[in-house]
Image (cartoon, rainbow, N blue to C red; front, side, top):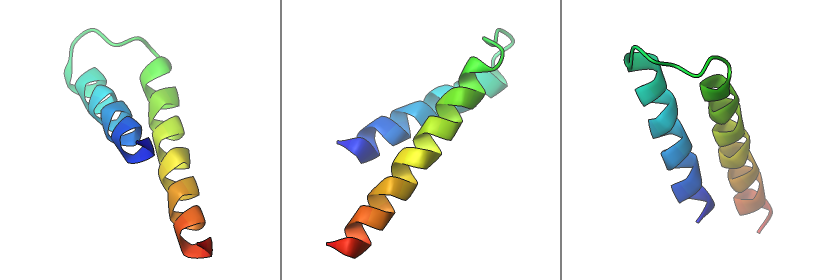
Length: 48
């Protein structure tokens, strides 16, 4: 489920970059959240 959320956030970030209407720093915050989620998943996967 976390991978799905990360992918959705990355897609929204890319759409924000290519669209003429961006919401400022919000898309970049979404990217940071997506990267953090992926990193947490990788770390948890290695521990298990």
